[in-house]
Every structure is written in C-alpha cells, then in structure tokens.
Amino acid sequence: MIGLLDFILLGSGGSMPSLGRHLSSAIINYQGRKVLIDCGEGNQIAMRKVHSGFKTVDIICITHFHGDHIFGLPGLLSTMGKSGRIKPVTIIGPTGLKKIIEGFLMTMSKTPYDIKLIEDPKVRLKLGIANGILQVNAKDNCPDTNMILSTIELEHSVPCLGYDFYILRKPKFNVEKAVKLGIPKEKWSRLQNGEEIYYNNVIYTPDMILGKARKGIKISYIVDTRPMEIIPDFIAESDLFICEGTYGDEGDLKKAIDNKHMIFKEAAQLAVAGRVKQLLITHFSPSIADPDIYKQNAISIFKNTVIGYDGYRKTLSFE
Image 1 (cartoon, rainbow, N blue to C red):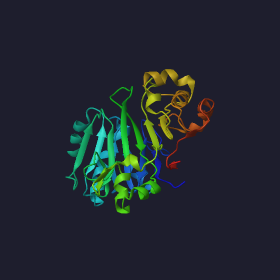
Image 2: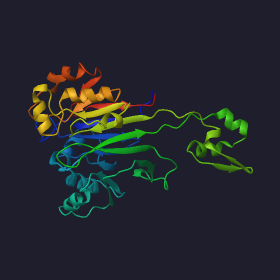
Image 3: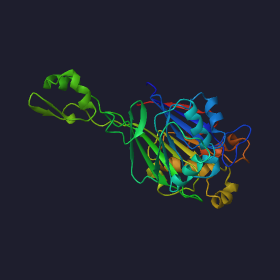
Image 4: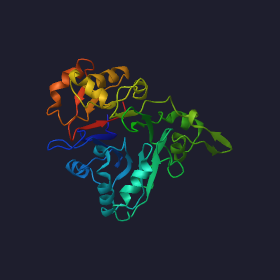
C-alpha cells in the first residue's frame, strides 16, 4: 500500500485554547495540496508545529462561526499572503460566511490572492488539481475530478456543517483490451480519465477498456452537534470518522444536550451505525484534562477508537 493522503489533527480542544491543547482543526494533505478544516485562535502555531506550511492551503472548510473555530482565520489569510501566495483560495462554510469573511477582511491589508466563497453548499462539490492547486469544480481546467466534497447540516446552537471528503479511485485499466482494439498508447490516459476519443473513424468509450468501479478513500468530519439520524448515512463506510466528544462521561449527558454536543459513547454509537473503519474522537472540553480516562466509554461500543491529540497523523491509501 502506498500512502495517498495524510490527515493531521492540528488541535483537539474545544471552547478555548489551553497550554497543552490547540483548538479543533485539521488538515488533509493530498498530493502536496491542502484542505484546512476550521481555524481557531492560535491555529498558525499548531500548523507550524507539524510543519504543514501555509502557502499550499488551497481550500478552507469552516464548520461554523463560533470563535474556537474561526478566530485564527484573519491571521492565517494574512500570513498566506506574506508567504508568497498569489493563487486563489476557496473558503467554504454555512449560511453567513460572506458576512463573516467581509468583516475579517476589514481588519487586514489587501491579500495578493483572490478569495472565493462558497456559502452553504447544497450539492456535492467536485474538486480537482488544476494550475498547480486544488480547485472546486475545476473540470474545465483539469483532466479529471480527484475528490468529492459533501456537506450535512448539523444540530448546533448556530448553523453548522459536517464535511465528507471522498477521494476517487479510477477503474482498473485493461491494457490487453486497449492493445487489441488498436488504441494508441498516447490516448489511453484520456479514456482512463473518462473521455471518449475518436480514432480511425471509430468512437472509443471508457467502458470499452476500463474495469469495474473501485472503492476510494472516505474521511468524515463531524463536530459541534448532537447525534442525528442522518449522520450514519452521511459517514457510511468512512475509512476515518472524526467526531466530537466534548464530554467523556455519561454523567455529563445533560450538559452535552444543553450545549448541543456529544459524549464519547454517542460518538461511538454513530461509528457503529455508520459502519466506519476507525473513529477519532476530538474537540474535548477544557474541563477534560486527560481524555484517555474516558476511552473505555467509547471502546466498549466501537473497538477501533482513537482518542485524538494535537499532531495526530494518519496516512490513508487505496486498498
């Protein structure tokens, strides 16, 4: 298995930063380009600790507009400009995104790159690498789509989105069929990318030389919400399910309900219902000094549970 992408948990805390825990945030590193999920206060320090770099962040996904998820954004956008970023950056978020970003930009000098905003997307977004960066709906500029980004509306005290990232895997190319049909090798990549080609007065379609569809890689990210019936279908068969566990013990269930959060047990129940491969619990309340104390509350329900920590890294590959 060859590593295809890295997931890095930048911060595992919620509400406010602490000496040992940055605020909830993560990076998906795909082919050298990066998707940042949330950007709380001090996020740049967390990024520097894992040596992620600022210049290669192409897409920023915001779950919601509470300070522990967005207060680091103006500083990051400014630093990206000072780092030599000139290509556009796309920011995705729930309803109200444009107003929030307009307010942030008033505190900054003009960025040397354009900022594209996608507010409350209701459809799946196609992502592809074009002109050296990861772009949304870039099919006109790049030969194929590399990733599908989907969102779900969560149950929090303000509009909040959950995110799903699906890395597409191309069907297996049948070289023998291509040779038998007399298709020149220089045209194979176009067929593998889903294009039809016209050669020697014959139209060749991808299904003529491609095998069955193959499973890609799926990462689901759900924070700041109560459990919902629609979540298991959204996270179904994720290779990595990142879920909040603001409170560890069942004794804090009322507090979790009142504040629209979850306890470890509820995160594990969602993992079971969604048939995911691995659960990573994060977004811990400042009142939890050591989340590992409550680990058994999740493992007793879903065995393959990891308690998140700042700097946690996982490399995912196609099977």
